[in-house]
Length: 488
Image 1 (cartoon, helix red, strand yellow):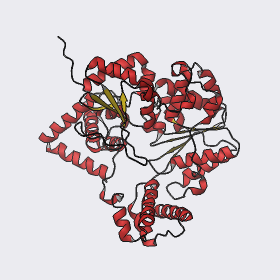
Image 2: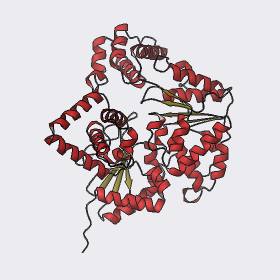
Image 3: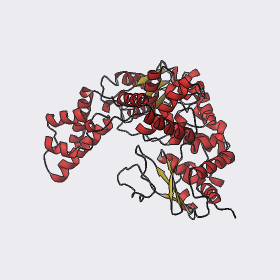
Image 4: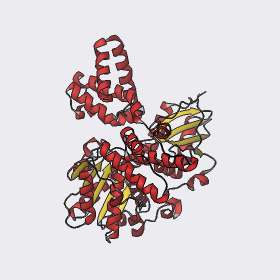
């Protein structure tokens, strides 16, 4: 008698293998490459994805198939919970799911119910574009050019200029003004909350006001439109309409996945650039560091003007918080913040302009709800969880790869390659170990960032370095040195 195994990584690997076989590599890479299994409890399998858009797409189109494949692996599975993971990994399996937070929280614990496919399909993204039999999309040229919605507050006038963003702002203004296409593509990269989306939408807002044909999309919405066009057998119309625009803006390029989708994006990019149409792209890192992108796409993106927006210095943070205070005073004329408090916020909230704005919103709320004046003591209490001085620096996998490559005199390409010489294998294993110890990334995600390796390879590297460091004091000291370098 065959006894089915309890849900676990091996069963999830088999589910993914069947999905890849049924859907094809391109569709699988677009929608399932970044799905992780978080655990299982009492007949419920918990999966996570990085974005709400991806969650909605999988719920709307693949919930029944996922459930069917899981039930083939384990009869007692009756529910799949699909969540949007944030920067912090979800709690262990024994913990109860958190309630959905109010006011813009990141975690969405709504489950996929096997007996409620209709309710799930109601969550389909962009329902106005879905129609016909089987959920096929009817993409008209108007739909294609509609793009993502723009925030009217994201204009150049509300963007605060400083040393860290002066080049990006100047390039964005020139692109928005039209005329001769000088920088093509314009590629902006920065960490979260440093203003790249503000600049992208400011360009789009100004260009639309000037009567130009503008399309602003996130990378995931570009994937959605392309896959929907393929399903509707209207891919040619999609391509022709897309290439007739004057200005294309793609945000969050790091989320563009799938070989066929990337090929189409590359063809579109070439057609627009060759036709002297402007392209602007934004991502969280430089083109060379987007390992998931095809080499041709990375090369084309790097061939334009690549501009980094770095973290704001004290002067810029001070200017941002003062500008946001003046904006709040238009709604609350009696609201005021003493210079000492402005200095305190600018000195201590150092991560991003978005956090600065959040800090000011807290001060406004406290002032309006308690009718208490804003003082330094009140600010210290209200903002204590935002103060970054007591927090460790957030380390990224790119930082680890850069530091390890330099320390061991190997290239980043060597770390990502299939080469197995000792001079490369040991630094690669150390980099994987540090990625597991110092970042919130899952084993499958770390494997993808190291040349699309399997998560078992990463697990082997982590265990290997742990064992060696216990027996080799020299290696243990090297690991501590690398950690200090990364924390600096």
